[in-house]
Length: 478
Image 1 (tube, rainbow, N blue to C red):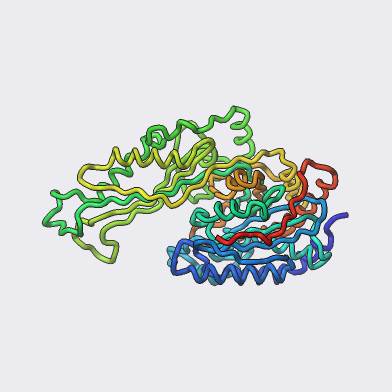
Image 2 (image 1 turned 60 degrees about the horizontal axis):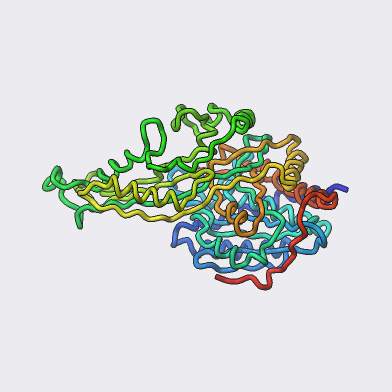
């Protein structure tokens, strides 16, 4: 038996599914901006109501110290595995607004794409699973397996409260494995399963000089400009070969076998495709590695932004009193973000000129994670992709960071199936973010097939543990 009814329902309700997604995208749920906190809460309430309409049970918004978690469940598939579905409903800031062809929170369909902030990352991809659940429940009243949904509102700021939430509710969240859709495919009709994500360390450096801005004519050449000092320090973070110049930074970087590197070369995107996706002509970075290796199995440090001094229209002849830079490390096995944080502090202390003072602040931490490619849940995901897209997926590493993947491994002792539906040109985190609508619809069908395949494999005695169906009654509120 195959899930014919659910598939027919999904195909016949595509226009409403799109309308629901557009309503979801209209919420400016920017977790990084305090002024948007109310919008984040309203978005969580909308999602709560939508999950109830879909037919899920025990649906609730659970507050944290900042933005809430939305939980739902359906636990009536006796003796079958439990799947923890994760996603995030918060989004990146839309700036710069002037570069958007249409307003970021007024979702717009142009051609086969839905444009809007969060359309792809991660509201559209999250919705593929929600609509797959709806398709089953509205046709049969049942799901093929047990399901728990965990949708957070802080992923885009590093999930600062999610780990505590999971640790406090580890019994209620127990499952056989997790699944999320927040990663990329190789291209249209080229599905991909991600089996590795990099860790992350987000930092700020503030350089302070005089107590207030100074007249550059009266003091230029006599007082060290903090913005200049900051640039001098930043220039010492990389060597001329593209390597991070922090002593000890590479000590724990895992060396991969020739077999693994050959596999990556066969399955991963070539340099020309990565450059085309980035819409640039020349690559840069650590010598001796392909661009795909540089963004997946090698660590990196990027300067995300610099500010200081006068930034308005026209000129202002000052020496600014302070300057700020935002930096992001992407880390690989077996690097520990806490250890890199210490190494960075030491390096900044060494290179800070004696004429200024520096302050380092940490705002994001996430460990890298690798998922075994032979887990039965990944085989089920591969079969689901094949049924929905008509072709086998490739296994890819991701250069991005998803903090919850390592948290699920450590706290719940479960792997995460990373079933991505984004395209390389979907402009995630950039102006004119979009979601390719054929991928939205095929993503829903992939999720339908995935839940059905998990049930089929479990009945065929694949190596899943006993089902975890403890309900949410005891869930704690932070």
